[in-house]
Image (cartoon, rainbow, N blue to C red; front, side, top):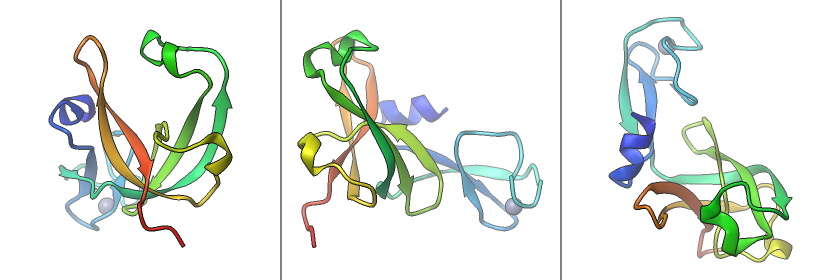
Length: 123
Ligand SMILES: [Zn+2]
């Protein structure tokens, strides 16, 4: 379902119907109160870089033209962290806590996957 949402340009998070906690990656029950009553909710797409690493080889053909590239763990404002990549950002501009917005990229085979770009307003 997470990837189905990406095809519609949404990142879906699980949200507990009881306590409102949102989490990712998907799990069968609320990590906080253990309830199994939850629903899919779209994320706002706002977040910040929690940690990142720079790779100098292509792990997927879709990235072959953009080596070196970064793999970043982005913490969404809702709390969950998503493994993704930061686009439109020089490697020297990458840093922890960088504010980013969700964007979507389409691979040559039509597969849409979520990426993040720096928020236009920087301090
Ligand atoms: Zn809960």
